Length: 74
Figure 1 (spheres, rainbow, N blue to C red):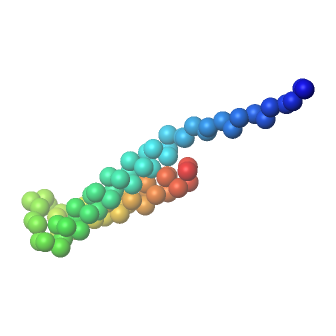
Figure 2: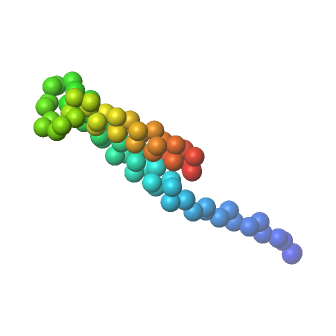
Figure 3: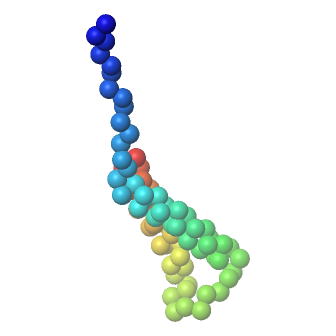
């Protein structure tokens, strides 16, 4: 009659870096897609270094950093 109940599995809290990675990944994809669109359709940006296409570079960097944070803390 004295049956032992198995403990319920507790849900683990996600670390803040999981959500930071998710946000960086999302925004990085948006910035990268915008940069690719601007490059493909010849949209001119009135900035000093527009010829370097910084939105493509920063989008790619944000995607990589976001993916590292996201998948490391999954």
